[in-house]
Length: 158
Image (cartoon, rainbow, N blue to C red):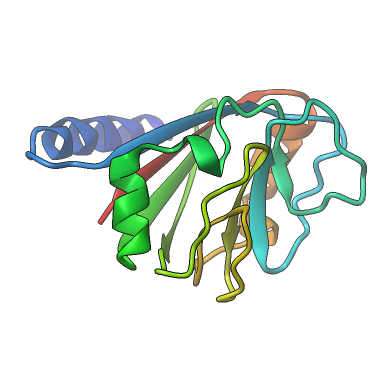
């Protein structure tokens, strides 16, 4: 049942990648038994290997990047208030949402990346006014992450 949407997505990605100036970022992380995905206003990934059950916004650990490590091109887009599409994939499951940048972003954290529904900004914030939070991630995806499955986050400038 998921085959058609994934084939369609693969075609979409190939076509979009041919446009000059496409800005995208890939972040890889792992699941963890303490992932709950219950936070109502944020989605976070961390480079830390461990999290407590209280970390209800975190959907991935051992991320290969933090907000400090994103490309200069994406930073420039975000600091200009540009919009982004965020696609999270775990095995064959896909979840996406949109958010936007702000000139107020600091983009300094070397440990975390946080997408926020609010306009609050700190050194970990990559984007604000997100259309989703951890609680919106599909429960089957959260269950896979609890079992330690890997996740891939693709950020594309809009």
